[in-house]
Amino acid sequence: MMARIALRFLRETDPRLLAKFAYTVGWKGMRAVQRFERRKARGEGFPAFLFLSITNACNLRCQGCWVTPSHPPQHLDLELAHRLIEAGKRQGTFFYGILGGEPFLHPGLFDLLAAHPDCYFQVFTNGTLITAAVAARLRRLGNVTPLISVEGLETVSDARRGGTAVFAATMAGLEHCRKERLITGVACSICQSNLADLATEAFARQLVDRGVHYLWYYLYRPVGPRPCPELALEREQIIQLRRFLVEVRCRVPLLVVDAYWDHEGRGLCPAAVGISHHVNPFGDLEPCPVVQFAADNLAAAADPGAVIGESAFLAAFRSFAAAQGQGCIIMEDPERLRHFLVEQGARDCTGRGQGFAELGKACCRLSHHVPGAEIPERHWAYRFGKKHWFFGFGTYG
Image (cartoon, rainbow, N blue to C red; front, side, top):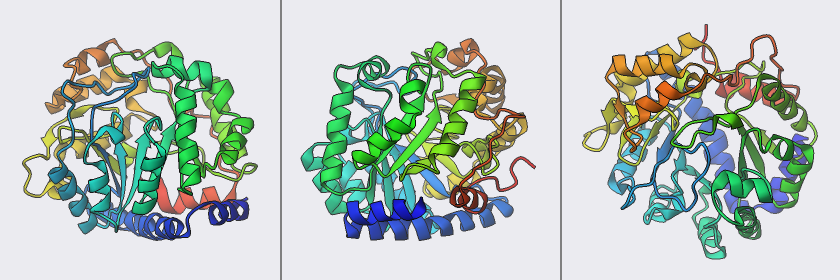
C-alpha cells in the first residue's frame, strides 16, 4: 500500500512541491521530534509543532465550533507571527498549523507563508475560498498543504456548517487544488450525523478520485457556543471508527491520519504529551485550540519562544491532563478541568466571556481512550511511525 501511495504522490503532485514536502515535513519533521524529545528530557517545554489561529473571522457557523467571530475580526499580528516562527526555527520547529476561523480571510496570510520558505504550513480551511487563483498562488509558494474540512455529504454538510451548498463549494475548492497538483488533505470531525457517510471505504476512495493525498479523522468535540452534545459519539461508535481507521489504512492508497491513538491503539492527548500547543489570534498561549484558556500572552514578549518553553501554566496543564487519563480532558471531565483552570488563575480566551460557564454546563463524554478495547495498528508503516516518530514520549508512564 505504501508503494501505491508513493506512486500517487509522484504522479499527481508538482515535483517541486513533493520535494519540499519530503524534505521539510519528512526529514525536518523527524529531526524536530528528536529535538523535542531531548528538550522534554531536560524539562523544557517548547513543542515539536506549533499551531497558530491567525483570525477569528469565518464565512461559516459550524456546530461545535469554539471560535467566536468579532466585529471587526481579530487577526493575529503578522509581526508576532513572524517572531513566533523565527523562535520555532531556532528550536528546530519547521512545521506550523495555520487555523482560524477561516485562515484565507486573514489579509496577510500569503505574506506570512512566503516569508518562511524554509518552513512548511498546513492551512486548516473549509475550502470554500480556494479559487483557481488561490490554488495557483499556493502552488507558486510551494510550502503549503491545504487541509480542507468536510463535515458531511450534501445535506449533512449544510446542517453541520450553517450554510447553503457548502459541500459543493468545498468540492470545488478540492478540484482547484487537484488541477494545481497540490498536496492536499481532507479533515473530518466524526459525529452522530456523519459517521455512516464519512467513515467508509467508499468515501475514502471518492477522495482518492478527487486527488486527495491524506485524510485526517478526529472525534467531534461538543464545545463552543453551539456545542450540540447530542452529536458526540458513543463508546461502540468510537471503537467502530478506530477499527475503520486501522483497516482502511491497509486498503486505500492515501495516508490516513489521526493524532489521538498510538501504535497500540491507546488514546492520548497531544497537549498532554507536549508535542503541540496553540496561539490564538490575540497572542494568547493555549494548551490546544479547544482549551481556550491561557496564563501567558505573547504579544509583548521580547522572546516568545522562551515564554512558550518556560510557561508554568502549560507545564502544569501537561501534568494535570496526563494524570487524568489518556483521553480528551475537555470531553471526559470538563468540571475537573474548570477547577484546574481556576486554581491556575487562567484567563478565559474564548472572546465570549462564557468559557468557565460553558465548562460548568458541559456533560462528560467518552473520548478516544477506551480501556480494554484498544485496537493496535495493523500496517507496519503506521506502527513504526507512531512508535518511533510521533507518540508517547513516556508521558503516561
